[in-house]
Image 1 (cartoon, rainbow, N blue to C red):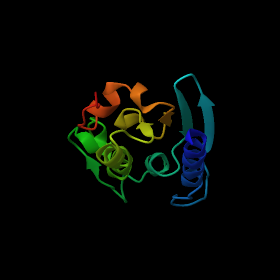
Image 2 (cartoon, rainbow, N blue to C red):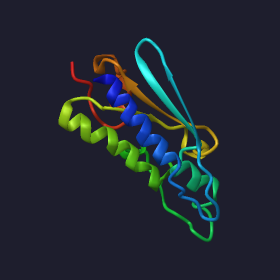
Image 3 (cartoon, rainbow, N blue to C red):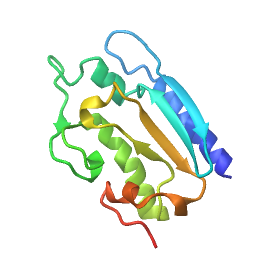
Length: 144
């Protein structure tokens, strides 16, 4: 079952990476996948949407997309976070509220490095092994 979840998540992120959210040209992101004893890791260089928006100047004139200034759960506790990227936190918050744990975890760099440093997505083979820090940064407590 976990393999199907990983494959579905990888496919979703690859589609996301090739979504073509660009202002002038279509430039799909590069994606890689890896596995270790406790988790699978999917990395997109850059993220196919949020990272591309930053790299293509979406948060600068003339677009001037919003940034969330204050660190809060929907910004993973990071300041000046690109507003588009906040959807990633909700992809963790909702499963925690429904299932008690996230299905996949997005690990973005600091807000000023989004687009330059890739975001990674982790899928833990056993949700009990998800570190507490991944719950705390989105205002949740790890079940225990």
